[in-house]
Amino acid sequence: MTPAIQIRFTREDKKDDVITVEKVNYDWYYITYKDKLSSKVYTFQSTFDDFLDYLELTFNFVKYDQIDPYEGVQFSIPNYPLVFCTMKRLRNQKFLNTLWKVLQTVHNEWPEHESSSDVEMD
Image 1 (cartoon, rainbow, N blue to C red):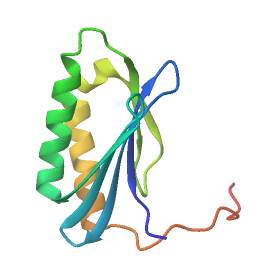
Image 2 (spheres, rainbow, N blue to C red; image 1 turned 90 degrees about the horizontal axis):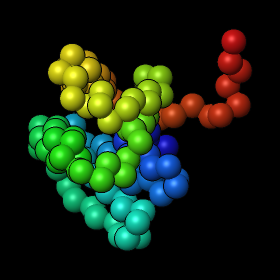
Image 3 (cartoon, rainbow, N blue to C red; image 1 turned 90 degrees about the vertical axis):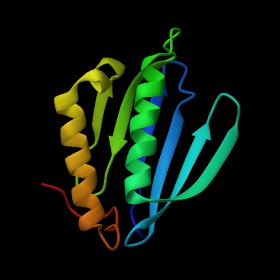
Image 4 (tube, rainbow, N blue to C red; image 1 turned 30 degrees about the vertical axis):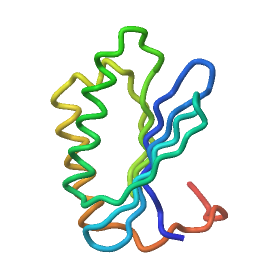
């Protein structure tokens, strides 16, 4: 199974919104956004650059939410540790620059498959 990027906007009530990114070929991706509150799912195809634009717009958009339903954002990115950050961290340009570099690295070196879960960990 080809690994996917998953970005989870976490809520206290566990009704998280999730963006999943699956690679189709070198520069095409399926992007799925699952809105847990409305139970709606939106899917579209995108180039990598358009995905980064979409993600940047999404981050900027949720910054203006005055009710602030999200507690944070969890990033599950192939070849990288699971990272959880607060919504405030999305305002930090150094963090965003690092995230863009990580995503660019994964785009360039997308893993072919995930290992089985029975791999022994140290």
